[in-house]
Length: 333
Image (cartoon, rainbow, N blue to C red):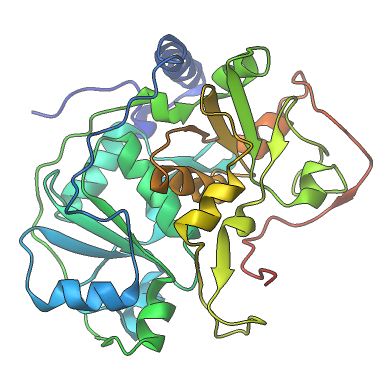
């Protein structure tokens, strides 16, 4: 029997939405001083490059599942052998006409069961040429308690450019049983983020481009950033496979020693909350911290939710230029 949950998005009404919000806020609030993470399995890499993945897959591993996060149309054109397809958008839902929120627990559980995922599976995520969708999905599974998770650096573009086999056709797993285990310390609600702006033991990181952080541009009708937040643009944690980058380049994480330098001014004794526009870009920061053995909470609603609430404060507001929401994949070398 599946556990019941007030967070099932299928039953959200105007009243239950606010009840759900209160529950999430309460859970997040009582856990604000705890950022514990699952014990890592040393045999399971957080990040893997295409060459090592090819070696890894030469000997079949029990309960290893590759998940292609691209659209079904892209998947059918060709994918890494044995991969199943769960498009990235499948993990998201809309709340009050705002897109990009993580699926509610029971909906996430149902999605896993439909696609044959089990809690003991080692999941390897990949998308196109960046890590954006993979790191966001990593955070989703991390929040819901899945322990064995790996991101393919550079995505399928890196795999193909390094001689990896491309397969066509459709792979599917038999339906499974799956149960989520919520880790609220990895999640930041609007309320928790607002509280953090007034707490000396909290540290907010804005992963958006500098022009958006400084209020010169915005993907909403509000300009600026959440008070006390510092700017660490997500593209600074990755590098192109070639310089200058071309349309065929893929993007991978910086080496660990360089990654450490990016976080050298981020205090280790504070509770970190990360945000961007809709929770995807900040997941690159979340995963970068994970690579360094550090933890954080990700503000799922991010700037889209914060800026829509006109009662909330905004720092450095200016009359800038509103730009259309888009996924940024053009990175400077």
